[in-house]
Image 1 (tube, rainbow, N blue to C red):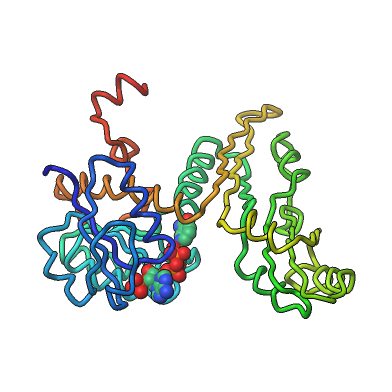
Image 2: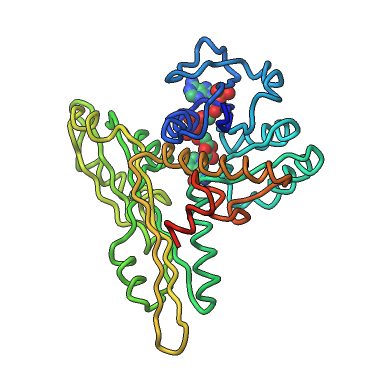
Length: 325
Ligand code: NDP
């Protein structure tokens, strides 16, 4: 067929999200999932799983390889390795290390003449693009990024370590007050603490002391003490029913002045039921862009800031001019 042939390397939350997202993109076909684990132990929805040991057999059968490994330990090794043989897309999200990561991947992709698209997702990713738009369009201004409502893995772990807690999750919420202030165009200076509040949902062990636990959480240094924190006690049934997804999202707001006293405010917002599924959806659109750029003979490392929007679309440029301009 003339579909874009893709494969996934690494099948965790993000890998599964990519498999689901490809089902919504009829111009693509998912040929294979590769894993470092025993393929028999990896349960996909309906894609064949192979050992990563055999991945080079697919060198000429796959247009783009989507790397779904973790940013901390997997991608710094896997992307430079596989950019030797494949056009790649990844979601590397260690912001401080991106320039070095880009350089190490670019060195490989320049030689292999492949495209290696790095740090695709929403932050980094769609939020980065919107920060760029804001700065470029309103040079005299401030950019504000708020995260949430989002499940924080680190803070959830911290509350689960408190004695008497049977199960717990923590959501980070953007502060409504801070957002309203930013939207008004006054360009406030806000600390991280001013920008976010924390909300905990906890199931107690039998006989545990709720008020003691609430106090222990609210006064936990660094994690909760600096924030406005609320603690809610719920039943195991409610916990299982309402707290089993990975919601996330946030806002990028640029507040600027085009002349004295003239406020211009730009806002981009995401409300995501599933962080990995949305990240995967962004990755799949950029996979299409990688395919189109590779057809034109481009190569090297790229970030989302390097890609023209039309390349993301399933439609031709002619159709896009008619429908979207
Ligand atoms: P996971 O921990 O679910 O998966 C990472 C890897 O772990 C998999 O690719 C898989 O590789 C391996 N793995 C080992 N054992 C298991 C197991 N039992 N079950 C599932 N996987 C296993 O991470 P996520 O998929 O949630 O996230 C991947 C990365 O995506 C994150 O590190 C983060 O950096 C990035 N991300 C980026 C975002 C952005 O906006 N830019 C947003 C969200 C995430 P293998 O199959 O080879 O064993």
